[in-house]
Structure formats: structure tokens, C-alpha cells
Length: 403
Image (cartoon, rainbow, N blue to C red; front, top):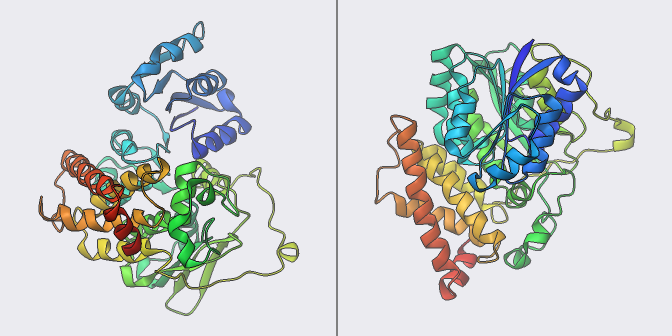
């Protein structure tokens, strides 16, 4: 029986992973080692009971008592806190879903690779902040990383057995997000509720706002460079409103392979769960006549400055990805709290990249995970300082204009 763990089980990707595991037989087909979550310990406990997990871990130590109460009588261990997440990752598993959002998912993913199994990677930050280290760790232990972002799963599938050397370009598609049709001069005044009305996908709040700003796509561009080794100038982004084509790979002979399907994350999750086989999944079949048409357009970098910034990050490499991600997360926190405007987020990220270069050389690679985490912590401090200055009035207005 295959041993599995699900990190970030109560998030959007985690919940859909749980759904697919349950449909595939649940405890009769899988031995669930660990499930982890954040503040929703009631849901975490239900998942742990349904899958008969060995241990359930909440990232919030203050909620440990509630988790233990919810698991009372089940025989399932309850743990809490960052060290407990690492301890859960140290438990051997054949297949691990890495779906913790943010840099918090980085260390558990590294630990899970030590078992030499499959890491189903939905945590964008792992490749953006520590791509070289993560891939080297996988190679060291004979582990395999399977991408779970719909775009990178699509690239992985479209590549097939063709070598990367045969690729002319990779084309990532983006819906354009909730604000794609807003006049440019109105974007600075967009609120959280506005940015969360995604036209195609049902996702969590943070990723939906990242979609509206296209910071998620900027992260995916960097991921593509790190995971597949595609040169930055060969990675393109197009607005595809229908979200039916998830990515395309154009080969040097002129052929273009497109991965298509209804906008449902269970495509990518199920592919990673069942790889190398393909199994039937509970997703709607693609009805092309009903779709009628597909559209593609070039993104406007004045509307989506994150795409311009990510190109600079890829040019610098080194620890620029760490700073980019940390600053993006901090800027998003401030936007969600109503302290800065929508367009101010990109300005905070750009200024953090500029300012952090006085603390260390961005071009230099972090030698190990501890250095990555140290750079992440420092970048968050600097980004918070900048965001608070932005929210103070004059700086905030100029930052929004610059963003």
C-alpha cells in the first residue's frame, strides 16, 4: 500500500487532493502518514479521521488543544508548530503533496525529498526561492519532483520524452484575473473584494489576488526557468480568457503542443497522484463546440508590472527569487489589510529588490537552505518597512503611481 502525506490539506489544492485520494479508495488504497493544515483544525481533524492518518499537524501552536480535542478517541496523533511540520515530513512516505502556501512550505518539502519518493509540488515558492538547491536535493536522494501547478503540469505533459534542447519556446497562459477589463487608471483604487472575483477559477483569497496582479504568473515564469531549464527569453506569457489551454510548448520543428482541459486543478493533481499512469478523474470533459472560440492576447506590462519585475529577477538569479517572493508576500499582506493600494504591491516588491542589494549581493547563490531562509527573513523586514512607508500618505501615493 502506498504511503502518502498531504501538506496543506485544508487549502484549495490540499482539499482537492483529499477528494481524489478518497475517490481512489481512501484508507483502503493509501496509508496516510501525515496531514497538515493551518487554523481550520476542525476540518483538519475531519480529514485526518477520514483518511486514518498517523498524525495531524496544525501550523498554529495555539490551536493544538482544539486539534487534540477534535481527534480525541481516534488514535491519531496531534502536533503543532514549525518543528512538528518538519517532524511530519521526516516520516517516510512514497508520495507527498507539498501544498503549504508561501515560504513556510519550503523546509518540509526539502525534508520529504530525503525518502526518495515523489514530491508533488504545488508550492511555487520552493522553486522560486531555492530551485537549484531543491533539484539538487532531489537528485541526491533519487527522488522525483512532479509539478502540480496546472501550467507546469501542462508543460511536463506536453514535453513528453522530447529533450528540452528541442524546445523553441514555452507559452504560459493566464486568465488575466479579476481586473483584466478594468480601465488602467482605475486599478490603483481596486479593493480586495474586486481582486477576488476571479472569472474562471475557484481558489483561495491570496492566490486569487495574485492572479489579478499576475504575481502568480510571474512566479510561474521563474519556476519554468528553474524546473525545466528554459532560457528566460524563450518563456512567453499570453492572456487566454477561457483558461482552457493551460500551457503550450513550441518545438524547433514548428510544432506546438498544447495541453487543454476544463479549468479544474484536479487535472494536475490527479496526474501527479497517478503518474506514470493516467486514471479516470472526476473532471468535466472539454466541450469544444460549447466553448465556441479561444482567444489569446499579449499582456500589458503597465497593467501587470510583475511580469517586468520577474524578468529582472531571472537576469540577476542568485537570491533575487528569495527577495522577490518574500516582498510579494509582505506586499500582499498589506493590501489584504487595506494598508496599501492594489498597484502599490509591485512598487513595494521593486523597491525591496533595490534596497536589499545593500544588505548582500543578490547575484550570489545561497549555499544552503538556512541561507535561503535568512535572506527570506531579511527581505520580509525590508519589504514591511517599505510597505509601511507607502501606507503613510505621500509615499503611498507616489508608490501607487510608480507601481
